[in-house]
Image (cartoon, rainbow, N blue to C red; front, side, top):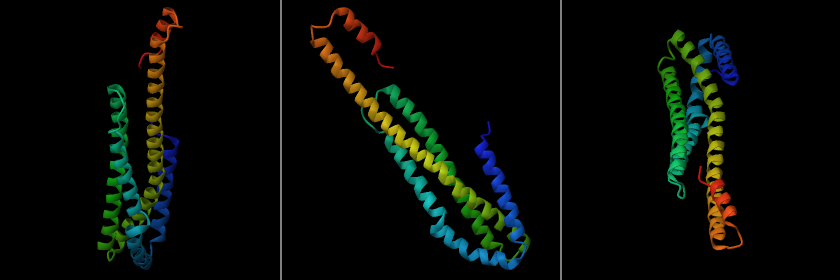
Length: 188
């Protein structure tokens, strides 16, 4: 199902494509665009986004190696991490595609008709690339939440084990209380 946020992004992208198509109706504007596109590829937009996405991918993959998790928790964690890693991989492919379109613009900049379409597409793709930062930031937040959930789970398990040891060692509790505690504190 389409989210309203994605629909708004699509509409904004179409508006930006149309506006830039109108703007690039003059060939000298396309030539002016070619110069600063190299700057954008080199350090303005695409390169930082690719490196950020790659570092997130590595962080997610390292999270699977966390110790102290049982098999069910590791299975859940690996499923969510594989989903995030796949999405990050798609964004990285998108960045490579965007760089390819920018390269094609450099190749076809003398052919005005192709250059006009490619320049408009380039501006729209760069807009989408900037918006992709929001998705990458959401992945980063999800990673932090996942790490904190693992730490909380470890602490809860340690507290439960300590309470179980205390419960089994202490004779102050009746058998009924011990049974109640054991029944309601089983692993999920």
